[in-house]
Length: 398
Image (cartoon, rainbow, N blue to C red; front, side, top):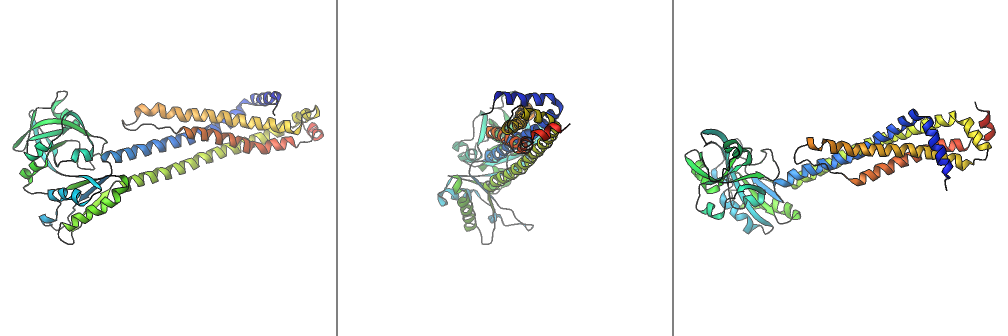
């Protein structure tokens, strides 16, 4: 058991060399802060990226026909009948939908704007997880009777109607007038990488024939029942499409699992690299503690001799110097952890809306434990060196 007097002596020795102790503490604090910040940044970034990907759609498989330079026959393109054939052909697919977007000019309130006119089939909202902000979504009756109704993206509704409610208002797309029945947004921003862009007007797919004169689906979506069914559904969608079109026709069929796996692997690799940097910083801090403690032993050799001469045991000398090292590393760890937690909290208001800082409190415990262990590990050699000094030799030291 360590006597209280030894702890007081250790604190007295540290207070007598405040600048030296502060510099040693700083190295450990930087390492501890690095560990906490690295884990926080990696965890927050991973959740943000996977959240964006998953917001596109749950267990999503999507297919497209990408013709080469030569003009492909119309029969090679994905059609509405192909969408209808997915669920009966693939038991693991709980729903299927299709979409086709074309550039058009929309007129409302005397203003004309270039937009994407997006025709969608039944099931599109469920698959793409659209959030209805005002009004309602397209219902089966709108699809069957070719109702001239539409939904606007949140940005487009604000551009045309400002703070006014657009539901019930009329816009003109080409020669057709549409009644606005709702305003929506994507659950997670896809930045125009998929079929929904900033200014998009969603209409029932049957109305697209009026503008295009053909039955072409640019993107077919299928939703698997479970995450583990996604690879199987991906293969089966490709098989269904090939079986319904002429031999040799190829379709791009992909899913989001590969993107999620890639995001997780990148996040893990980044975390490992940054953690290694954090632990290297802690090691450097530990070496600094050892060097300073060795210098301290040399400077306090005479003092150690006096203490040994008046009855201090080797164990007492060893314990005193170990306590000094642990105090330096412990205080440094607490300071570093505090900085590592406060910085993300301070920058949270400046981050994008959906980027939420996520703390792994285990990293706090790990940072403190590792920092304390660094103090013990690198403080042992100086402590053992001090404990081995012979009283007579130490007393001769000036």
